[in-house]
Image 1 (cartoon, rainbow, N blue to C red):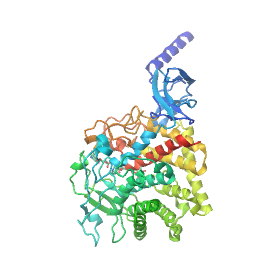
Image 2: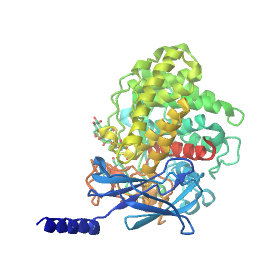
Image 3: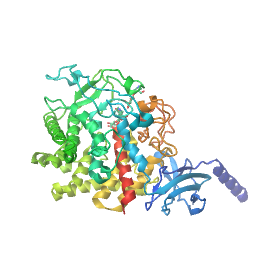
Image 4: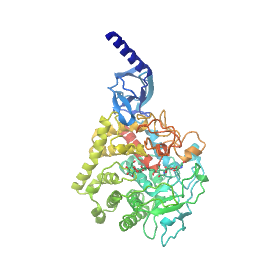
Length: 569
Ligand code: G3I
Ligand code: 9MR
């Protein structure tokens, strides 16, 4: 009887081994020398630790081991067992073999060189009001779209000086996402994040070239690219009162067409407190950065600062103008009924740039929340800027800001170090939201800032490990950046990539990522788990769109990690 039972058990185990699929999830871009390196084995059923081998390019085994005991990763509804391959610190291409499968991966110091540039070049490809010539766009060359020289003032934005249907010129800027619209709130956080990248790593960016029309001038390429959007943002301020239009869009989303075929009338729609404050904050940051390029761009810094101050004044006089779409407009809303964080953020940036007491007085550090940044949540940006410019603030203010900031960063670090998958995602129930991949990217950004404030290496280590998530060590096996990795996002909800007749999408774009709410009702979602609610298909605007505010923290973090890969401890 006993013998019969154990034979049955053995057979059962053999059956499990035969039928059970174990997937290998890894960073498809590669791993950095002298940083921890994890490859994850995942399966729907529990499984025992697996032996693994790592082979070098000559097929010689350079590392053998056994993966850790599997634990349950609830967000993906899988068991995960981690293989630690940190011991490999010689640059090269390797093969990881385990559970009858194998993958190839790279180790080195310059792992994100090309992807980090592509993540920035995406902004050039997103420029409105200009052709993208072959010289700069290669196969993605296209004619000009959206001149935006005859936008009309929508009734929701009309004023005495600009009555309804007044024609205004509002060219340039970046398309928001897969759509062709331009929204101030979302432009705001995107532009800030790129400006912050420059402010925090200026030496690195001064020598970074992007092959754009402005390359070679006296202004660093990344600042030329950002200026394309700042110039548009400036046109969104009504000169007579300093208020800022919420967005420039058609009445509805267009069909799948190329920019040059877009013929619908565009409007500036509404004004809002959130738009005015986002605008004020970004213009203030930009003013202090472009002040160093006065010879190349005379008066630009002054123009930006004036715009910032008048927008802030308007917001103070109109503190509760919350945007909702007018009845005849169905494009993105970017609505926000809580602008306390935008008020703090704008005051912080204006104070840092001007040192005026009136802005300092408006800052209440205890009111600044420490949420992971997002288009609706800008407190974190205020903390980042305050800590970077800490000498401008009283030391007790900085101590509070730092404690608050680090309590979030510590949670993120803890999650990377101790969660089943060893990723940052999943601290908050809402992490897997529309644009969840940008939540991950912003969490990594906070880890990088925490490293800079404290010089504690563990934050940076966590940042490297957390980045694996976006590049393949995740719940789906996709590398969520177009054009990179062994299994990249290939069919993003991006009108240009869908319609340009080029097989491959524009490279360097971060897909929005898993979103269990699946508002698009697209068929083919991989599974119903939080981290698996993703489908690489055009129809999935809720899980597979791209957007300027999602690429910005990607660009910030990839460039920073590649920089440290070449220089850091
Ligand atoms: O406010 C609620 C909150 O109370 C609730 O707890 C939470 C639960 O899910 O949802 C919150 O609202 C979410 C909102 O974003 C704010 O985070 C909505 O569910 C969610 O559907 C909404 O998604 C936004 C989406 O537009 C739809 O409006 C995304 O954040 C935003 O990135 C996205 O932006 C679009 C533009 O409208 C148009 N252009 C493309 C761009 C990217 O897809
Ligand atoms: O393409 C639009 C995308 O940029 C937005 O994020 C999304 C959500 O508002 O809407 C998309 O447009 C869709 C529209 O909402 C419903 N009909 C299908 C459109 C996409 O083909």
